[in-house]
Image 1 (tube, rainbow, N blue to C red):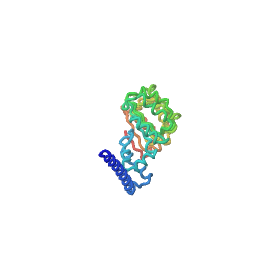
Image 2 (cartoon, one colour):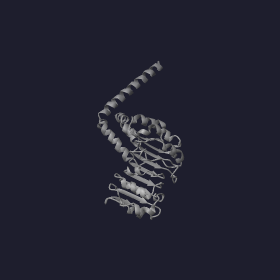
Image 3 (spheres, helix red, strand yellow):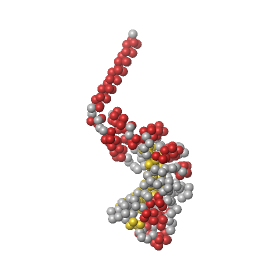
Image 4 (cartoon, rainbow, N blue to C red):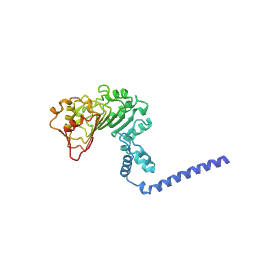
Length: 295
């Protein structure tokens, strides 16, 4: 009899708990925060993600906590592919697969710090099946560039618009060349290279943002300035410790005339170990009056 009564009480307790949860859900549904249109919730989550993003290369998942506001917010968030298309490849594979599933064919942003991933040979194979959807790639090779670069060099990423590449060693112009060309990346707008190789002039001409830091190149200074001059969209140009890799400085004054006019440039940031390349380079640029210059 005691066992029977305990079973009855457990059944009643379960029934009461279910009824309480249903009443809580009905109560929550009357609150303003739980009656917001999905579009407003999406905007809140998007803005929260932007405000808590601390650096360019970070994949921010802080917004996921806002799913705990209520069941309705969770349902809305899970149904919005836009929220799931930025994926940190270094996180657990289950998170990677969940984001792919919920992104529902949207363009993707992948981020990986290969040395942190501790699986340097697996990063590019994970990305590869989804390369055609890739809109932005943020990747730090660490000390594993000799493994990752050959894999990445042959990856077809024709929809890529923003690329951030970094490694920890001075690049070799041959072995570390990622084969970044305008034919492979016709939509590329942002190119941020740190310890990498820059070699395609037409790719440069199509960019809105170009950052090269400690990079190598097989270009001459004349070819580089001519590529800049051909750019009609360049807004942000950062060149740090790159000029020494360019050839042809002796013929610069004779060939590059008139100066390259960068009519849309809003920011120029230039640094070099020696100041000697800077005056000849700056002499061959014509910038808007409101452009910010950092030397």
